[in-house]
Structures are given as structure tokens and as C-alpha cells.
Amino acid sequence: MLRSLPVVLVASSLAMAAPLPRSAPESKGVSSTKVLEFVDAADATIDSLHSVMIVRSGSVVAEGWWAPYRAETKHSLFSLSKSFTSTAVGLAIDEKKLSLDDEVLKLFPDDAPASPSSNLKAMRIRDLLRMNTGHQTEPPLRGEGSWTKAFLAHPVPFKPGAHFLYNTPATYMQSAAVQKATGQTVLDYLKPKLFEPLGIEQPSWDTSPQGISLGGYGLSIRTEDIAKFGQLYLQKGSWNGKQLVPAAWVEEATAMQTSNGSNPKSDWDQGYGYQFWRSRNKAYRGDGAFGQYCIVLPEHDAVVAITGGVKDMQAVLNLVWDKLLPAFEAKPLNEDAAAAKKLADATKSLAIRKPVAKGTPATVDGKVFEFPKNALKLEYISVTSKDGVAKFVANVAGKEGAIECSPKEWTHGKFAWSRFADSAPAAASGAWTADGTFTAKICFDETPFIATVRLTFAGNEVKCATEWNVGFGSVKDEVLTGKTK
Image 1 (cartoon, rainbow, N blue to C red):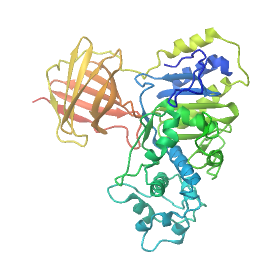
Image 2: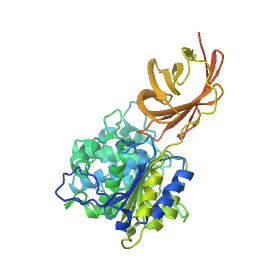
Image 3: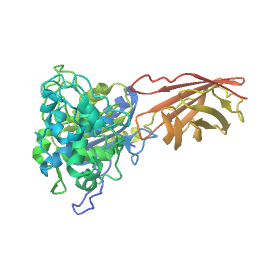
Image 4: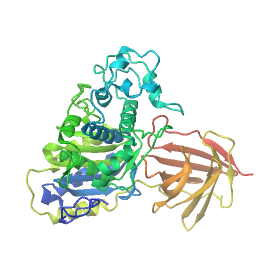
């Protein structure tokens, strides 16, 4: 829940894993009233944010999670992972294990094509960092073969350094370069140097078939961990009196290294650093698909961490600039207990919208509906209701799972559905939303993805339709028809 908290004094001798200190907004020059305006607007107009944490002068002044998302739950960062990979490159450079001017091809001689082009030969680590590799299209990295070899085999029609292309495979190559230079994955390399000192517990990072951290995506950490990372950069790489990341690297990585557009209203046209985006209002950020943000505002001594599952990422940043930025004042404000209480009260009920009960349940208890072979690997489902709570059972890819669905609350568990063919952490709510139609909303709450499943029953038949909140392609799954035996 988003709440303002009393000032908490935090001694510098506390363990490294200590959370960020909490302070009342006004004590740090932040208006509770204006933060509330931001939260209300986000709740009303953005579908959907999962969390927000606002840090001012090193203290958390406001924080909130839209149920069923929780403070202790990790969230997939997607491309916000890139900024962490960049940090690993900077640390390896500081240890003289890599250089910005290292030629990429020479780092991977065993994966080099037989006749490399002059542009490929000219590609350097700094070009990977700036998304200036010279590619016209992203190299396709997939399958079981060597991903570094596939990257190096891809055409490089432009001179490196002369053409900006947002290029996730280029970040994978940074990860591979760090692993080649240090003998450790980026995840393992960063654990003692970054994650442990910041108190980021149990970070996870997906790997390629070759065992290399994906680099450009795949990192999962908590909202507060994102905020700590932003605060570290705001403090020029210093944490509890120790320089974790060289200040010179922080300056260089977050400065504009590449021009990438001219639209003054777009936060994706303000320039690009080393895996950090420049932003309007003299800010910079790391961000990831569907609404994962680490926004650093040096002129306001502030950091904003956000996770979500949104279709329009610019709309979230517009809200930050229009509603939240005016909340920051140059000096502490007078205590405003009434406004702080309104902020706390208003955010206690933050939640993803649940299905609303409006219909008469179908008579389906005890019935199992089977589906013909399909791409979703759905074999059968059943819905059994008792005391207003439905037990939703599904067999996906030969494995049965069940989760309870109530219209009044979210129930946490594990479930498999469609793109989550393997059982994954999830929270569900559900109701009979029309006569004979049961709707379940399933939040896979370590990710941005939410499935809305509509089961329309008619006699011994059910129509199963699934729509996702966001996706890289179609958000609607194939409509399936199941029947009882």
C-alpha cells in the first residue's frame, strides 16, 4: 500500500541489506496533496500500474502496490535489465578487464565469420553500449545455437557509431563480453559488487542456451531494489560511504552518447547513453517493456521506481512530469497531517480491477470440459463454486493446476495458462459476470502479464476466450470450444 510514514532515522552502521529509510513527504519537501493527485490520476487513467516508489533525498516518501502485487515480490524488468548490464561493463572496464575500445570481433575469435566485413571489424564495446552497432535490423538470437556467433554473422551495413538502432542483442553481447573477461555471468559478477551491497536479495536473471545472462532482459528484482539502483546512480555510484560504481562511469553512462530523434514531446527522442535513456526535464532512466521504470531526476534529488503492465509507456512518463514533478519543492514543507492521512487512506485500496459479479452461475459443478488438441495446450477445465468462491481447474500440457477465484479478493497460488505453460506464481479473482459466463482475471504477478479468461457455458459446451493486458504480438488467444464427455 502507498503510505506516508514518519521519519525513520537510519544509522550508517546498519547491515548492507537494510531497506531505504522512510520519511514523511513534507519533511523532504514533497507535497502529499500533489502526490495524491498523481496516484489518483495513475489509478484512474493507467491500466495498469503494479507499483510505484518515490524517493526524495535518499528517503522513500511514498510507495504503493496495486493488489495483488506486493512489496516482497520480484518483477520482471524486461529492458530495464540493460542498465544493470551496462553497470557490469563499467565495473569490468574499471578493473581493466575490458575497454570501451575493445573490438567486439576480437573478443570472440571462435565465433567470427569466415570473411568478416570491415564494419564488423570496426565495431567496439562502446558501439554496443550506445546502440550504434551499424546494424539495420536486430540480429535474431534464438534457438540452441551460439548466440554470439549468430550476432557476428548478421550483416552490418552501416559504419559503427553512425546509426542508432535500439538493439537488445547488442546488450547480450555486452553480457557475453563481461563473462568472457571475468569468467562469471553478469548476475554472479554483480552479486558482490552491486546486489549485495545494495541489499538486493535473490536477484534472478534468465540465461541463453550457452549459460550467458541475457543482458538485455531477463532480470527480476523488487520495486525497492529498482529504487536503490536509481539512488545509487543519483549518488554518483556511492553507497554507505563506499564507491560501488566509478563516478566517472555514472556520468558517462547517463550522458547523451547518441542522438536518436528530435520530437520534444517524446521521452524516446532525448538521446541515449550507455544503456540509459535521456529524458525530458533533464532526467535519465532505465526502462523496460510494458512499464518498468527507474527514473532519476538529479535536479530534484529524486528517484521514481515503477512497475506495470501498460500499453502506453509515454503516458506514464507524461503523468510523472505533469502530476508528480510539481510535488517536489526546494525546501522542507510544513507538516500536513491531514493531507498525509488522505494520501494513506486513498491508497489503502489500490488494486487491479476485479471481475464484477452480475450473472447467474451455470450448472457446471462436477463437469469436466475437454478440448481438442490446440496450440495453447489446454486439455480440460472445470469450475466448481462454493460460498461465492470458484475453484478453477485447468490441465495445460498434461499438468493439472487449480486456483481459487473470488470476486471480493485476490487469491495467490501457482497456475499454468496459455503463454505460461509451466505453472507460475499467480493471483486470481473471478466471478459470474453474465448469465452462464464465468470470468477469471489471473495476474502472473512476477511479470507484467494479466490474463482475462472468459468461459461461456451452454449445456455441455464451453467457449474459452482469453485476452491479455499486454503482449509483443496479439493479445487475444485462439477461442477454444470444449465439451463434456
